[in-house]
Length: 227
Length: 296
Ligand SMILES: Nc1ncnc2c1ncn2[C@@H]1O[C@H](COP(=O)(O)OP(=O)(O)OP(=O)(O)O)[C@@H](O)[C@H]1O
Ligand SMILES: [Mg+2]
Image (cartoon, rainbow over all chains, first blue to last red; front, side):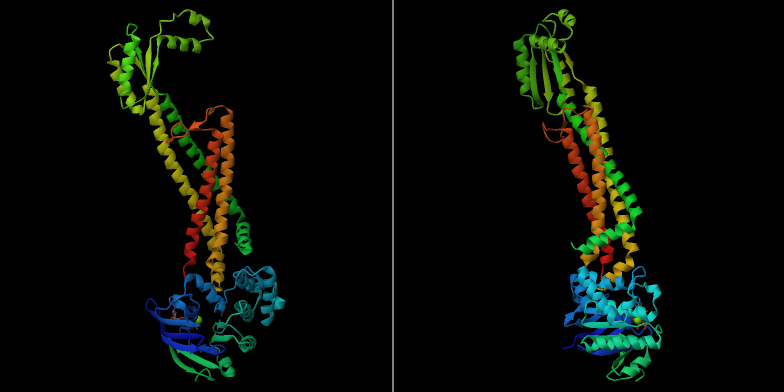
């Protein structure tokens, strides 16, 4: 049984077809790259998975649950099981690194003592414990992304999704981030990463799903960026 | 309700201290005016009821009209649908009443002999509107010398209190709407200034309740604080007013027969009413304000 399944999913925004009959499956514990040019529909696909939006037609399944049919009050539970590193990070400028990560623990009503243990833990995992009192404007792009990863990990999610921005990060930071993601994947978490970074894709030799104009063009294991 | 909700609510409030104070003042003033107009409506209705209860037609009879004849007229009137109560005041009773009323002025009493005052029937109607017709009918009855009733006073007060009633209710509704808008605008400001934060909270799995509760708390806080402040002012006003002996006998309750309540109880009821409206207003306002942000 697959953990994530898209069945003939189409998503239209007025006259733009962001996703066009997309069908694929991801098994528990897989590591998948999602590649394709800007506007291919990568972020849209992620939005449908966490029910930030609903498909125009087709089905999105997570653990055999039809995500678009989930009751409103079950959505938070779904989002806690899928950690997302957003393309624009979505960090609050007025909050410190620690506080930004703590948001994820607070929304589930974590008592302070649990929060004080969990947040440093995940910050340690992304190597940012030493910068926990900094504000986002005092961080590099790569560090911001790591804060966002730490926040996505705070719920100990079943799936971690990283939606990477184009040309945002230098090679040094991206290999650090890849190390973090691989480590998380080794611990059993499914990882789905949308990226434009061919160097990384080529190096890791994981499953690569290639999209263009809302459709899947190829889906291969151990592939490289241009294959 | 979690500790987090209370913490977030305090954080919102502290961040918008000045706004919070301004809002509490505006809502308090609205509630205060609400209370004042409610009181005016109630007191004028109560006074009207008192006057209506007092309103009667008095028919004075000629000296040569015998008591037996008068009692016949009384019996006839008792069959009348419109009549609520009839009292017969004999010449002796009238004199007794007169001496009673003027017991401090013996000279006046000396100057009047026991049979100079006429016998009379005092008639109250179920509906004050019937007084005028009854008066003219009585004037035509055999043996009636004179008919008196305080038509003007009752009628005038009635029109004044009707106007007070309509304007009062309109103002009450208006101030309710103003208070509601103020609560709503405040919450909108809070929500907008926290827009990104709320969005992120939702994306990382916050429940509706997690986002709603601090906002509802905030609205209830405004409602309750303003309601209590307005009530304190109103009750103090009430204490001063009743201290002046204005409502010594209490207030008659409109729409309820023969019920009078002490003024203090009246203030208490108004206070409770205002605090309850504060709570309802806060709840409705916050529910409306957050709805927009909880769409999926
Ligand atoms: N809310 C929206 N309203 C209208 N059009 C949208 C909306 N969101 C996405 N689109 C359109 O859908 C298409 C796919 O967008 P999407 O963000 O999924 O691309 P992407 O693959 O993530 O691109 P990038 O690599 O630049 O992040 C684009 O043409 C985009 O303009
Ligand atoms: Mg994107």
